[in-house]
Image (cartoon, rainbow, N blue to C red; front, side):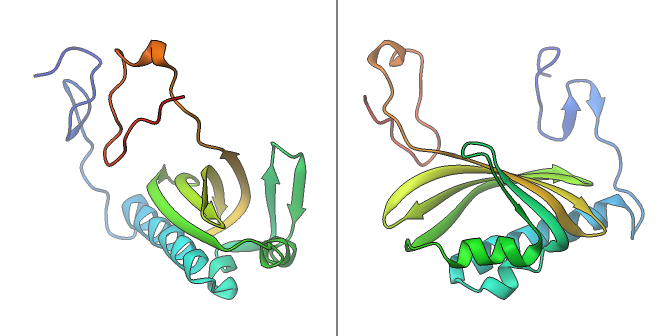
Length: 161
């Protein structure tokens, strides 16, 4: 058994078992449907299928880009601003996690061959995204002073500064 407070597969925290799956039609099924919708959103983004990419959004959804201060209001506006993007874009989903009305996707979005790391925070109501906040970060090299402390992430190599 793991030390107190450590995450153990199959348990929330050591010594605290997971709750049993909820009844059919309950939160577990809703989470599965939401996850499937998010996965399809990212697949459609990769395919360049704008209609399928944006069906996840409520008609009055809001998309925020805090780094630039921009807010896009409404599914049609969100779709239009993405459709106008001049770069060749590709999407690789690294992880999707969430529950109920709050979901987070970690992605690598490649613009004309240059990767940008993205975190997408989606808030849901009535099975649609009502508010999404996206953060973007450029890759950076790891400083030498951390080399003895760091290990590579799965499937990655450490880039030196």
